[in-house]
Amino acid sequence: MSRTPRLVLPALAAASVLALAGCSSATADPAGDADAFTIVASTNVYGQIAEAIAGDAAEVTAIITSAAQDPHGYEPTAADQLTVQRADLLIENGGGYDAFMDALIEAGGTDAPVISAVEYAHDWPGADDDAHADDDEHAHDEDEHGHTHIEGFNEHVWYDPHTIEHVAEAIAAQLSAQLPDAAEAIEANAQAFIAELEGLEAALAEIEAAHAGEQVFVTEPAPGYLVAAAGLVDVTPAAFSEAVEEGQDVAPATLLTALEAVRSGEVRVVIANAQTGGAETTQLIDAAAAEDIPVLEFTETLPEGQTYIPWMQQNIEELAGALAS
Image (tube, rainbow, N blue to C red):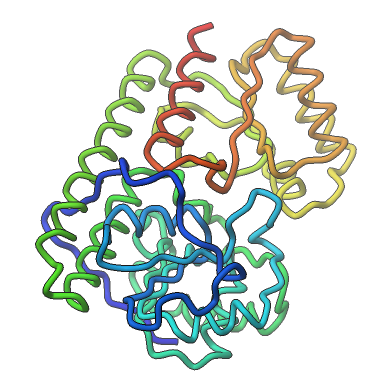
């Protein structure tokens, strides 16, 4: 699968004050305007980021548009395949999170550039070589519809504003190359978007200044980068978060360790994933409530009517408020 090289411009970005209507779904309109430049993103998170940067220069479609759709095990449709085949630019998270996107790209034989967000993360294990591309494809062959992981790597990189800065730069650079007549507007949009991302980073730095080293429990790894950027310590047993993410039962010994952590008196906040969980997560949340520990619920995809910057700002504000309580 062809991928765009890492493209970095000095400081590119886009305002998140675009219409809250959001990008369209692949199922709703697989064809769209045949003459329009089309961006297809794996989820509405990346679709909205692309909208903010492209502005009026492109139409954006996302495959995953609802919290009811799980990117981990999403089964792509024929309409999704047609949408990807017609795309001029493709944006995915990568790292095994949205493996369905790789399957669609490979099956369709598209020559459209692909921007994979994980490749811009500071801890991406493939940063020094290209071996990860073959690893991803092999993992996909092993389990076509499963959620494949790269051991030790948290693929939920959209919860890291700094990584998203680099993703925004890459989107802007690629769009400017493909749409030179719109390059000035695209780069202005990108500048504004990155300025807002820097505001998110400043807010996280304020949390770190006030609460560095304080403990949190995160039931599933999605907000892990946000927690780390705030200087907090995640005491969740890895086996607990992995089981929850995979939709598996948490082993009794692991659950006991998790409950002991919550009842230790050291955990300041519990963060749950509103889109995943089970009986063990409920039990842990109940234990937190009994200890008067604030419980926050974050989502993996954009809530309806939201755009990326206000959504992430709300998450940060909720975290700061819970720590201050």
